Structure formats: C-alpha cells, structure tokens
Amino acid sequence: MYRIEIDNLTKYYGENLVLDDVSLRVKEHEVVCLIGASGSGKSTLLRCVNELVEFDEGEIKIDGQSIHDPALPAGVAAAAAADVVDDGPVALPELPTPRADGLDHTSELLPQDPDAP
Image: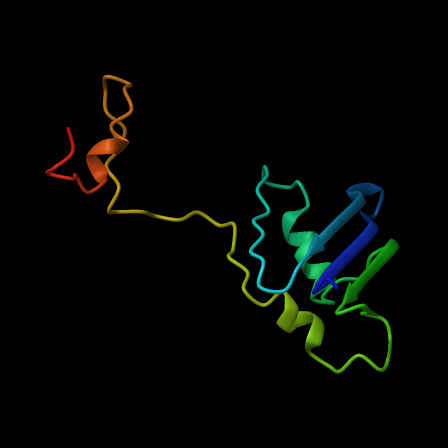
C-alpha cells in the first residue's frame, strides 16, 4: 500500500492549466523531491494533497482512503505531506561564490581523505 496516491490530478486557476493529469505514488518513509521551474505546479500539487485548494479532476488517497472521504480523520492528509520545504530563495552562506575562471571547485568543499592516493 502507498502512503500517498495521486491519480490523474488536474487543476485550473481560471483558464490556466497548472496540473495536467499528474499521477504519483509515495511509499511510507519514502522521500520525494518535486523540482521544477517557478510556476510549474509544485506548490499547487502539495496544496491539493494538504486540502488547501480543490482540484478539478482526479483523486488523492492517503493510506488507500480518498481525501474527500468523510471517514478520513481530520489532518491526516496534511500529516502525510507535512514536511514541505518552500521554494523561495535560499541563502547558503557556507558555499563560495562562483569563481571567475568558470571551473567547478565543489571538490574543495568536501572533506579530504589524507590517506587517499
């Protein structure tokens, strides 16, 4: 059984189609990252799972039970997708700024093994 099942989810904001027939399965303890451009529907999908916005077509189930089922305890859908990281700008001061030479210097950030050849 899946913790979260999303089947053929479609969502419009007015005439703007933001979720087009989206399907997704998430197992218990599985970590899923939604990555995409701004405005691609990531937050809208999570808002649908959390019942913060209504979707136009499709179905969302939590532990096999529809989120529209009155027997589903309040808050279960939100708890299933509770760990959400906002897609706003994130400052990472511990990372260096890009070098003028354009080369990848990320290996300088990793701990070095003194015994490595």
